[in-house]
Amino acid sequence: MLKTLTVENFALIENVAVEFGAGLNILTGETGAGKSILIEALGAILGKKIGAGKIRKGSDFLRVEAIFSDGLSVARKVSRTGKNFCTLDGRPITLAQLKKIGAQLLDTHDQNKNLELLREEKIYELLDDEKISDELKNFQRLYRELNAAKRRLEKKFSARAENLERLDFLRWQEQEISSAHLKPDEDEKLDAEIKKLSHAEKIAEHVQESAQLLNDGDFDILTALARVEKNLSDVARFDDKLNPARKLLEDAEIFLREACDEIRDYAESLDFSPERLDRLQARADEIFKLKKKYGASVNEILLRLEKIRSDIAAAENFDTDAEDLKKSVDALERETKSSAEKILKLRRAAAKILSDKIEAEIRQLGMTRAQFEIVVEPVEIFSGNGADTADILFCANVGEEKFSLSKIVSGGELSRIALAIKTVTKISAATLVFDEIDAGLGGVTARTVAQAVKKISRSRQVLCITHLPQIAGTADVHLQITKAEVDGRTLTKVRRLNDEERVEEIARMASGEISPASMKNAAEIISSAKKI
Image (tube, rainbow, N blue to C red; front, top):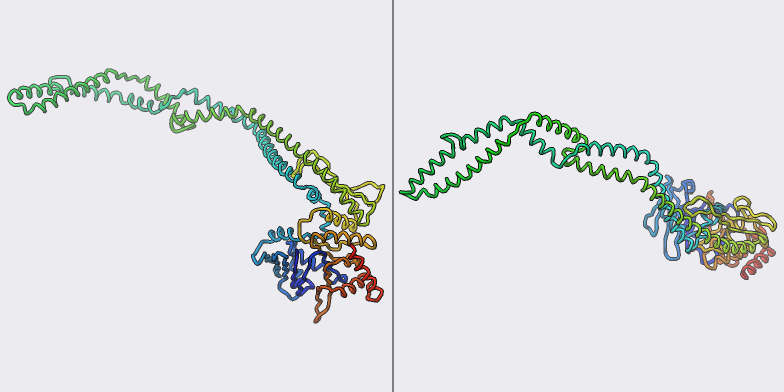
């Protein structure tokens, strides 16, 4: 509940602190006194656009502060440069945060706000209870998944031609590598053999010479070694100290003979063939060309071949994947449609109940023959709100066809319809503000509107600007707004009226003058209002 509103340097207001009370707070005053300025100041707390043009002449800034019953303080300051400074309990907040907080604290209704009721989003807000909201969340989840799946499918189909082209290229690569019949480490073995054959003559020369030195002729190593062994055997007959040396020589002879055998075998295996070298070099050239395309070694090329074959398998499964994705889209579409149909059914049921209640309230507000209906119709295309569209149909007279409220309703009728809607629907904000809810009303209708406003004020604090004495008479707190000239400057002031002052103000509102007759009439209006 709003306790106080302090306004500084706002248009005609220099410095005003207004104290509000529980229940119905009525604001009255002559035209031009500044009632709407006070509502604009409240709008500043709601985060509405307030330009530097609203700053009082001669001041550098305007400031508005609202204090609520729980001690919460919300303030906004606007400088000549247009810069906004907003605070919550003295702590800085952004203008976006102020808008969010303000919407929870105050609910304002003026001609512009009433027109918002005609928007489809606002109609859904009236209809969508907890059950509908839960199903709507489920629908929106499915709707997001459906759209994502459709995008994937569309991308899949658009890539079909590209996939076929890529598949042909992959198959060509696979054929090029496969036809080479590569073996692991083949390039290393090939290089080693080419190196060997390229130096075959020199290898043969060295092998032959080595064999001759080991065991060929009178002075080869093995012959010389045998002589040394014989000499040491002769020595051993006289002194055995060289027996270890002789044993080492015997072992050495064994190793040398094994080496000699291997060298002879190697020499016999040498088969230098220029034709084979040509074949090996041709093979090496073939592998070199593949390396330039697919990898630095045969092993890398073989790994690349595995990857290409895997890619071919994936590309060949393209149509299967697309078909699976299409089935997923169809399944999601059925689920989404089913959820949308549930929402439609729930909304239609809610619309029937709410329409009957609002229509009954509208008739109590003076439009006794009015017909009011919220209609919800299915549509083919999904949206974030489901697969339906909502509108309000209205007719003020019996026997006439109902048309969309946005096309036929007058400002006065719309005000009463908005009041009826607020009377029967849940109000989230603790304070409800009505600006000129009585526009174009009078007589019995004014009294019924007063009853409706009073009814709302039983559970919520209501701030209401009015020109009608019938509504003013129902006030729990009556605030008078006046305009005066002080030192050549116009000032707007706000004061709370006592019982006697209320009678005078209502007398002025009813007849335009203060007289015994008007005072008596005003007293009767207040007395009658107490019965509401």
